Amino acid sequence: MGLDIKYPIGLMFTILGVLITIYGFATINDLSMYQKSFGINMNLWSGISMTIFGLIMLFFSRKKKAKAK
Image (cartoon, rainbow, N blue to C red; front, top):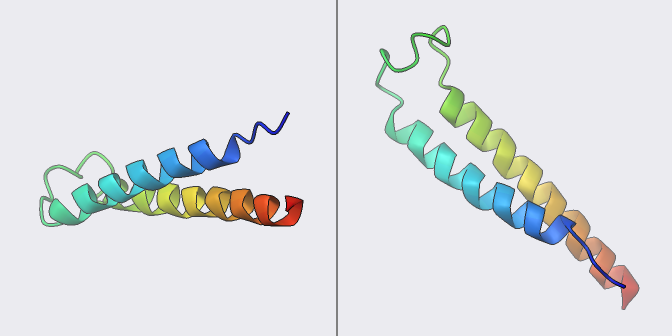
């Protein structure tokens, strides 16, 4: 059975990461919003890391599919 969970996980993390990154860029000038995180734009950094993780998962999913053929 060829159930590969890397593809849906990668797709989910990539889509959510891009959305959170866009939100982080949209609120980059709102300093009061990021006062609790010591001025660090956590939406931006977590969105970028989620996007990178999602793309890595998609890459490994594609690599396995190409190898199986």
